[in-house]
Image (tube, rainbow, N blue to C red; front, side, top):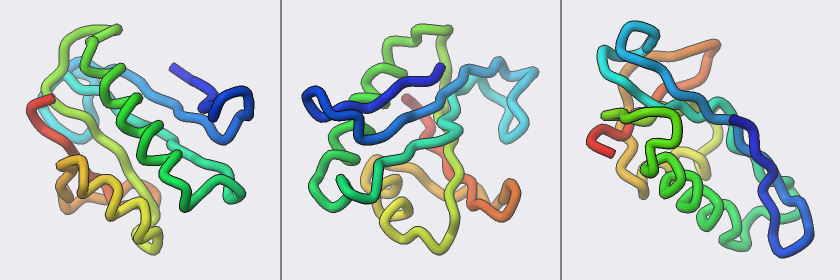
Length: 110
């Protein structure tokens, strides 16, 4: 699932998400959603738009549009402290695993 992120009529970023069953989940043993990419254009960062968009994405996932799930996974560059803080604010915890040099975090009990 790929979506553009808009602030009114201005495209400011995009998000890519997916749903996996427990059998397909490469990070855990539960049905899950994953966020492959969550990007806000540099010109629009620091204005609270990313936080607002991320909350909307989580709310959308909670509708279980592609099936029920018990977790949400996302990975990020460990040097990106803003992403780390954002995901932590929403209850994501480190798994101790990495994927292509990115730290993997999970939110259980969505």
